[in-house]
Length: 423
Ligand SMILES: *Cc1c(COP(=O)(O)O)cnc(C)c1O
Image 1: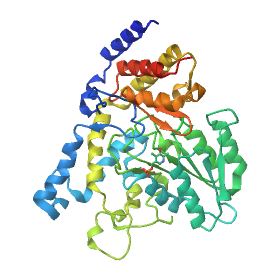
Image 2: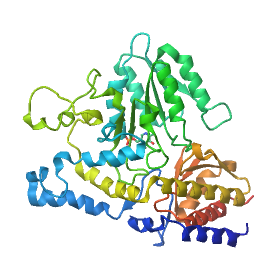
Image 3: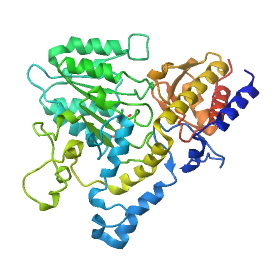
Image 4: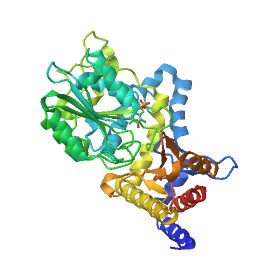
């Protein structure tokens, strides 16, 4: 296609986009020269929903006007502030509302889940992760091993095959089967952060449980990005953050899922706190811990409301847009970016992310030929295209269906092609 045709194609797709109006519900950053930037970094930090400020103000105002009475009065009484988040979050991760809770941050939640679901015995003690795991996930499991008096050698790390960038689900399943009776826990990302690859949550969970191991998932790059069916997968637990695709702001409160077969968690070891106590008797202030049913029983402290309030603004947008329309536009936007790269970049930009719809979300992970990645990334940033860089050589761009347009994708890839060094 000629350049003008690509632009016309993008303009037509934008004109036909049923989600086009949602873009105006976000504040998008400006480039250094004051022009609009092209924000393709929602996989790292989602932009601010306009309504986020009002939701924070909903907490500030009762604090100013009611102080302690805000626990029971005002637009969203603080005592049960976290509760309305469960249903929309459950919809996003494919769970029942009682299986989901908004609390803490991702790595903290991971530790709380490992306390309950990593229970090594002398014969069954191994943890299986992927070699490219996000550092925080690896730090969490290795420190849990040490906490139980075990060495790092109790970790099994599965890597892509030589010369390949992606994991194979079959290799993960084979490694789980090989670890067999020694395997206590499998912890994997539903979407790999460096490559954007979606793993087969159902198949890997099935294999883990068949081996007698617990299955836990990190949804940091998955929630708000790809369809999820946690309940049906049978996973034991999952954890995530809300500041990436979910647009709830820097350091936003995270989330956790505990499968309903674990009931109220009695019988599992757990690090308890008063906010996990059953809400009906929490303020009786008795000495015994009576857990809230479901995932809510894993709460420890009363939640930081100023870091939770903005999530209400973005969840309202996700609900209004609807999962089917979001996924359909997401697949189209990212496929458009891929076609443009293939047409315009002379084979000098390798796309690491899988092509098949079932194996990808918004993100494209790019490797630039000839070691030119860093300067190309710098030139792209200077041209107002905001993506990010992951060492040693990956440039990540993620068009997001709630606020990006096809014309932005067209323009971003034109600037990428223009940033490539002369052949
Ligand atoms: C972003 C991300 C985290 C971040 O952890 P925090 O505890 O929220 O700082 C953890 N794991 C993965 C896979 C991530 O992508």
